[in-house]
Structure formats: C-alpha cells, structure tokens
Image (cartoon, rainbow, N blue to C red; front, side, top):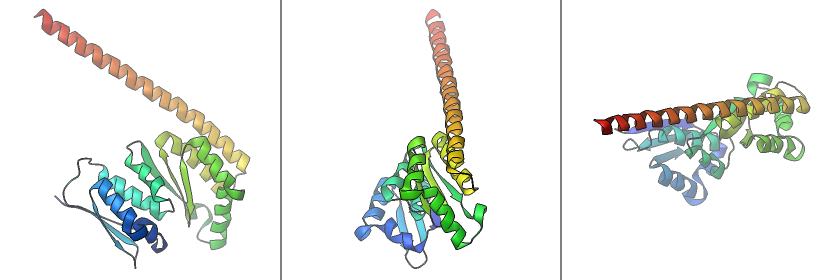
Length: 208
C-alpha cells in the first residue's frame, strides 16, 4: 500500500533540501527508500513510499528530517533523525513575543548570543543541535537532552537573564540524568527477571 505525506517548508529552504544538482534529495531517497517531490514555487514537499518500508517509523523520520531542514538545519545535522533515539522539537517564538518582526529579531539575538555563544553553550551542555530560524527555535537530540535545552530556550524567550536560564537548564539536566538512570535500572531489572524466568522454565523442562 502506497504511503504519501505532504509537508511545507519555507521557499528559501528548498535549495538546502534539494542540494547541489539534487544531491541532498537523492541521498535522502537512497537512505529512506522514498521518492521526494519538491514544488520550488510553493515549498510544498510530497513524500511517496510505493510500499510500506521495513522500518514503520521511516515515513515519520523522513518527515521530521525535511521539517528540520526547513527550520534551518544543515542536512547532515537533520540526518541524525534517522536514529531512533533522536527527535525534533520546535519552539514557536511567536508564543512569547507575538508576530512583531522587531520582537522576533530581538529574541533570536538573545537565543543566539554574542558571536553565537549562548546557542553554543546550550548545545554543548545538552549534547543537542539548535537552529534559530525565522519564528522558531528547533532542537535535535535525544529526548532526555532536548528537555534541558528547551528549558533554557523557553526561559530566554520569556525574558529571563542568561544566568537564570542556564541555572534552569542545569537543574533540568540533573533531573533528566536521574530519570534516565532510573529508567535504565528498571530496564536492567526487567531483563534480569526475564532471564531468570527463562532459566527456571528451561530447568523445569529438563527435569521432565
């Protein structure tokens, strides 16, 4: 059964999606098994899988990759979304300052920081990639890493000082590490319990 998805990206990002002589589009098609049709005049992108892919998440992954490129990411950064552990999070800055071009420009400046220092600091502390483009701040990373980065972005977008935003980020980093460790512990316990049940079952079969 054919799968068809549509997504719209800014027209000035169409070139980044297609790539030089179509190289980026061809690479995406090769990696995902889809056909990608791009309307350069409208920015509308149509994704077509002639048959369901082996990875049932592939249509969603490709949609996220194209959306990420549309929100300012370089294709090589967007390709991280092929990994099951990576997700895309988009924060709409208009939710904080409205649609005023001046206000959006000001908030983009706060998020990027002088010489890009603010964005780079958040990226390094959280292990994420961040793109500030137009009216959005987009983040690519693992779920537990994205949340602290998003915390800092929301704090800055809300008018907090950089030092305050970084403190909030650090608290969220600690919280996420604790949650991730707990989750890993639970997975390990379940694996041990499952292995023990299997061993007991095999032992019972041998006795019979």
